[in-house]
Image (cartoon, rainbow, N blue to C red):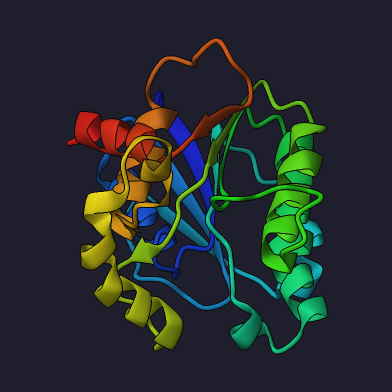
Length: 224
């Protein structure tokens, strides 16, 4: 094999499942490793590693890849408590990043969130910001961080707040101009396209590189 190897965590989520589909379709990748809690659809290029995430680090200690896609995330409602949310969105993702850095991965691609800030008064944004901060300290040769606002698309569960926001958004979109464009909702498929495109575009000068709404749309269009 002469192509690249990609590894993905969060392959069954809104963005992750689209990332997986796109990676498998790209000839540049000879092998795609999906780390998941439950099996995903088989594919000739796919190695699906079904693991208990409470033992994640030990399960992926010998996995090597060129590009690592981190698409794992939950909600406070799904997690059931702040501590459980922190374990998933911070703990599991950081374990994954540590393992990939130790295994020689050269490009780490992380889905974060608009407003991520380590000292935010908003718990969700603070967790995302702390995760970004700690992954940055790992000093990947290339780190790409994606900060979408509201993610649109079909999910496996009903999220009342997101559904309501999606319905109201067309009413406020005309006013989201200039700096406010970053809060525009974006489809999960577009974020996935942006991530896969960025993984196969030349590295920018800045590291880490942070991608907002317009950046993701541009990368997504380039991928298409």
